[in-house]
Image 1 (cartoon, rainbow, N blue to C red):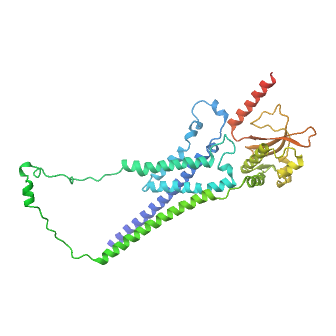
Image 2: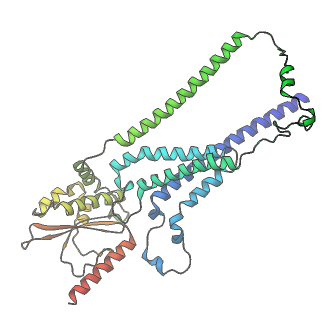
Image 3: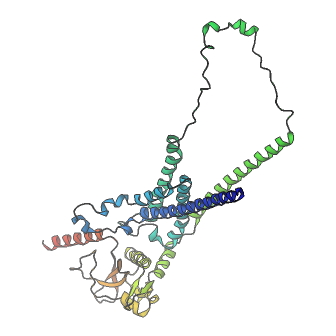
Amino acid sequence: MYQFLDNCTLRSLQCGMILERIGFCIRCILTLVGALALLFALSYPDTLLPPTPDIEYVQGYTLYDFKPVIWGVPLLFMELVSSLGPQRNKIWFFSIITVLIAGVIAFPVLRAWAPELVSRTLPFEDGKLSWGLFYFAIIAAVSFLLRCGLFAYLFHEFPEHNQDENALDANILNPANASTVREIAANPVRTKVRFLFGDADQSIIKRFMAFMHKLTLLRRRRSFYYLLTGALILLWFFLYPQPTTDEALQRDLQVMYEHIQLPDGSYRATPRAVHAALRVMRYVSDTGVLEGETLPQALNWVQVQRAPAQYRNQLLDDSDLRLASIDDVFESRTRFLTVSDGKRTAALFIRTNKEGDRINVCEAVDAGWNAIADDFRRRFGTDVRARFFSR
């Protein structure tokens, strides 16, 4: 009977330990997901709540009023999940440090192959991963100071002593029982030392010293591994090969023709392709590399032959296209190349000579990245033209 009860108790303890470990793993995973969501909210808030000019006409509170602090939602989720059991700081810092290290490792790779995820393509975009990692590192540093410093001090349980070590009996402090200096010197208090054990076992002392030496070596080795890992991550961050200007241009010329085919048979560029196309078009507009070139030479330079024939016809369509960022009522320019993913559009406009066989000017136009910026630019251009033609 007692053996049966002991077995049941042992099994209950084992099941409790297993459930505790499972709960710990679930909390780690959920907090890690929250940390990823926090980094995403800090890096790409415009993806969560795209800017829209219509929001200024909405009365009352909306989600856009909380957009500057939207990153607080995953932060509160992390705090809630990590606090559901013991070892909350261990789970918290495991998630924070893991995501921070992963972001630092991914940063140079994304900067080389997908720079639109790391930095702004246009000045009115959100901060992307560069600013997101910066704010994430600040949150990690502040949480370390609060959790391991301030909170550990404020909520630390100090031991309670029933008797003060420095307290003395009132009889001892009575001046009537005091002794003079001469009396104390004549009758010094001698404490007889009484050893309870025999001579020390030197073998035990040697084993203890060897054990402490091993612990010291393990601690130093662990610190060395931490420093080595940090150094390798820094070397990876700063020494990962980045493309030159020409290499980045060739990369974008290749990426800008990535596309998908829709069920209706039409084609649509990928978001990565639109960003690459805009970078290429801005390079063409800023450097004037196509000025003076014929149309076939310009098509050969932008490597439009990379696209399939049907998609190529869509890219080179020069019919009128209304873009949200411009008012082209009074424009006299030709749409030369257009890449769109259905939301964002990158277009290259040209102006030719009198004969129409050579390019004089190239202009890159973007639309769809930021609805508020597009509305402002369209209205501003209309106002300028209205004032100009009213003279």
